[in-house]
Length: 219
Image 1 (spheres, rainbow, N blue to C red):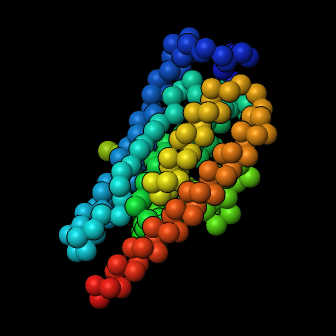
Image 2 (image 1 turned 45 degrees about the vertical axis):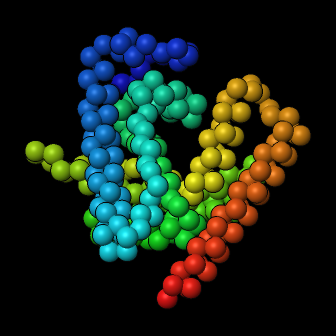
């Protein structure tokens, strides 16, 4: 696919790409199917825990698929050719956020996913043990998911973010604040957000300790 004729991609109208839009539809299809495969894997794990342990470690999941406009904007920011081939080098076109009850659940569910032999781990970043400078915490995995179509098998990358409820609350609110504020966040606000991140870390640790004590008392 040749480079797409756009220099300013603000307010893109994807219909201007004419026949090339079909290529983006095919791209979206395989990423959408890969998301469905991953969602099914997590649903099965959660059902297993509920059946065997009467406990569901996954509170809820949120999946998202980047729109063609967002893909093109990201390619432009990276200085890449605006093409399907370049788009396929991105690893975050399809993503799912898995919200867990407790900190231990995050690592347990992540380990279960990593142990599945049909998946290939492309990348892993632990922002829980090594938070970002702004206080962001989450466990990130990028996995390659085999998607079986009628005449071929495609290995498709999907980004997975594992968080506790408190991590997700902080990240969602922090994102809203940064989205509304154009430019550099004032130092005092950044400090407040960092302090709030510390509070959520303490909350996760205390709640896990409380759960462990309750479980030990019932052994």
